[in-house]
Image (cartoon, rainbow, N blue to C red; front, side):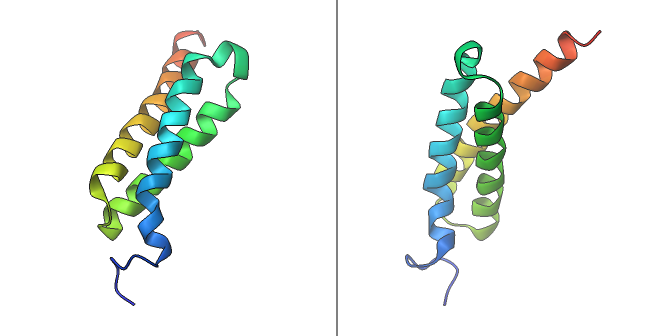
Length: 86
């Protein structure tokens, strides 16, 4: 089985990363209503699947967008925690 085949689980890294990253970024905007858990979980999973997809070299554009949006959502909450921790 090759790395880029359409029936391997690695072919889903891009779309899953893109969807989870988008969900993380949208729910980060509405964190007062949905809480912190959903954007942090979706963002970290999007970043993980984005990195896995980039290393598997499948659907790089979707993986890069998912990695970026998921990373932004996680960094948003990290910045909030640092700003209000002192």
